[in-house]
Length: 386
Image (cartoon, rainbow, N blue to C red):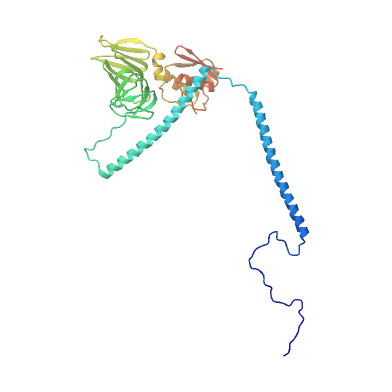
């Protein structure tokens, strides 16, 4: 048998050695043939670098904490020297509070009105759908239309059924209103503003007829059609407006009816007798005497102030001072004059911002925006520049 021997050279392959197939990597693994000393030195340098980085972070956090403490210390020193703010005069503070409250009630009232309008529209849609599906024959009842809606309200106002009115509430024909300690301004669907004072009872038969059972009411025809006068019936006579602003007061205890006129004319009819009054006049009818008595009555002042507080809103933003003054004179029965030409020129300025308050308070606020002031001279409002 011949055996050939051959020397193994570089590049020749040989059988692979057996190796573990566990796939694990030894702890602190290093590249083969890398000197152990150099590897350990590298590891120590890396650890020192990591320790330095952590120490720097701790110093940064500590520095930020110190700076925050210093800021708090400086603020405490600053506030220690601050004096209390000077309080405004009590009258000014009360007027500001009333103006803010009035604006809040106006905003929330508009929201309630929009919400109720949405609910009313939804109810109308449902009713229309039912009529379409089930039909409405000639004998089907027709829902009554409202004759007025609440434009302003103060205090508690209820109906005969005990329901309380709110801003935006609709009033149906035949509704009896009792104001008790409240008062209310109604916007008639037929046109005009009807206002009811505290302690009164008023029934709305329709948009053209009301009944005053007790207390006091005020009516402003505004842009109401001339052919649709408002008639107010009482136990002492019937009142008929002729494009006017009038006030009616029925005193149950004294059995007296008074009708005062601020603008236009008003007629009073009683037991076949009738009389009329113009601006600055008052008609008086009593249970005992048959004749109607005429007396003078100022178209402004204490007798009218309750109605002025219920005046319809006037949006001042984007309107001129002169436009506001026109609304003001219509709501208060006063006249306006200018003390100088500069004041009259400033009345043409446009107001920026909404102001919702009683007419006299609103006058002061609007004039202040135009750098104007005023004084009272009887019925006249005298406006002058500052």
